[in-house]
Length: 278
Image (cartoon, rainbow, N blue to C red):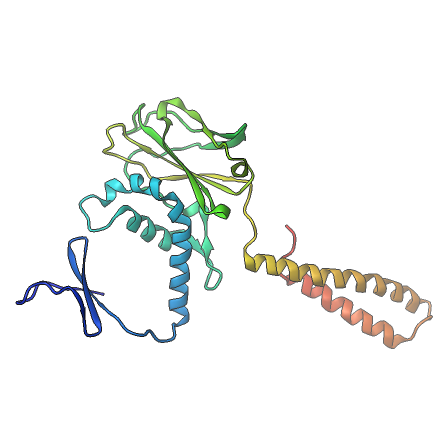
């Protein structure tokens, strides 16, 4: 992508040859078009990283439009651009093709206002109990507004509360009336915004509720581990019997040696195989 300044014949617009011109945030942009070649592993990794980032941020659009509004003002970026840039760089873990979100590192606001600290969350009746340190330090104000967003990754949804409480309250209740929300994975994020809307704090991850489901690769690892564990249990029982028989001279040495080898190979494999129950 290149930026195109106005030439002697004015600003081009549309497709010219294998390039296309268009306006983006007040700038004339020129892009090359054509049939792409086979993507490299690095390109595939970048595509997956973008896809994973967009998937986690899209349901939180309403929160992001407010939380990154101040930082986006006066720039050519919009709030979603900023959120995407921060999280694609800092909130992902793993390598292609197993890139995933590290929810503890997700960034949903950046600012200079005193951020929420000593966060505590717990499930109540039809919602969450949330508390924080209500102390007034540095540039914090008693009437700073608490913003809360709850990501429901497994459902690709989010619950947004842009005016949940004031800093001085120290606690609040977040209603979640839909039954599935109380049992599905929840990642809770908060930040403070000044009452005059001129300052905002960094976001903070208040925590996870209901755990997180296994990824496709983790599910496959668990399934493989269980298959080998079942075979090991069968071999171990037979090996123990043959060991006792061999000690009494009942069976041939060859049969015992064969079972002993399989027993030791499976045992060694299980010790290093992913998917073991925690």
